[in-house]
Image (cartoon, rainbow, N blue to C red; front, side, top):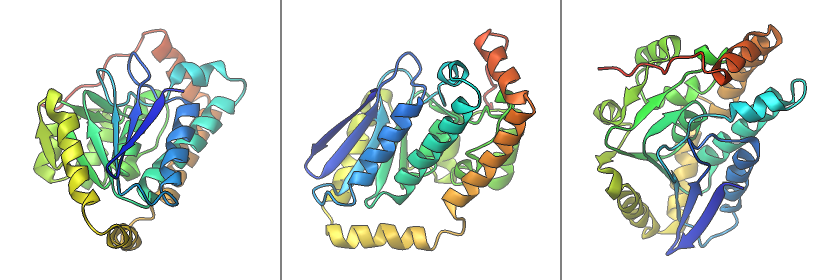
Length: 254
């Protein structure tokens, strides 16, 4: 398991650590969901920091794992586990702060776009390479990070946006040096942890209740199109090309 947890002073820190690129495999996605779901009953936890070790926050699902599983098991389980993980972040009983360094791609967008607060290291990039992967998904979450028309272009082109751009929209609260990211996220979590926990939990529930989009249902709708593309053979073709090294890296906006 590539997920670890530490609870200190009311703040749970959940760290993803799956080198070299922090691809989110099926078991780890389910583990993120399990941990964040437990905080509903664990009243010691007043805030959560979701972060990662290494050079990037998340490179998306583990394509190698998906292609090794028989039949449609890879795409089905990747879909299910991601849906559970994203829902767990969004519906976590306490606020979740995502601390992003390096790349945040694919399922990384689903995690971060489900969070309550986002902080990022300078130069961090955010993107959905789904079209190049013969798939769809997490546009629901991307639209919580960038304006609608920007999200559409990012999905169609697979172009990435920078932390600095997202900060200009207000979706990334702060951009800091990479070596200050953990401390910044911890400081923000401490501010929340010092508040009355019952009021904070009520505030989280109320904000989710007035959200204009039903996040879980919207994402599952996207996944239906992904499965269609997979049945047509387009998903396997794109993933196999990726594993053969035949795909260029997505561009970053200037």
